[in-house]
Image 1 (cartoon, rainbow, N blue to C red):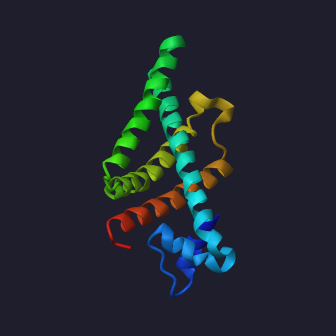
Image 2 (image 1 turned 135 degrees about the horizontal axis):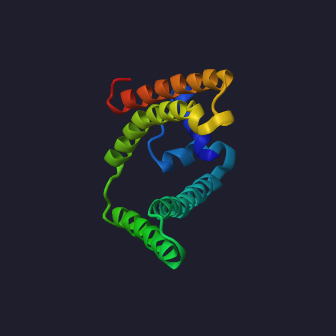
Image 3 (image 1 turned 45 degrees about the vertical axis):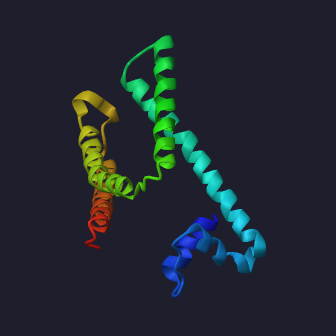
Length: 166
């Protein structure tokens, strides 16, 4: 919550500039006093731990399902994939590699792929021969088109930001 509050304050308030976790903690000293730095540290630790747990598990879940393995071999693949993601992440952290370029590439890919996937889903949900009564209705198509337009706008905005155009 502290990070979200600081981010919104720095976006909308004049004169607030936050470039590090230390500066974020300083923003909360009027509210929390000397505890601000500890609360910020606990929040960042919790965010890091939750990401360190969910990212490897989500990757392992997706890749082990794609591989169509069953039984013990699927469980073994799940464990190895999860462990590999953890090791790669720890390796980047220990090597002091700045992941900014990778993050920007991921943002660019998200901005590009989100409208494409949305359009594909909208297209696929209109195949009456495959879906029968479960195919999109006119209302669902109108709402789907609105979602597609919104995701295209968001995608173009993210791509523009990554490329420095916006």
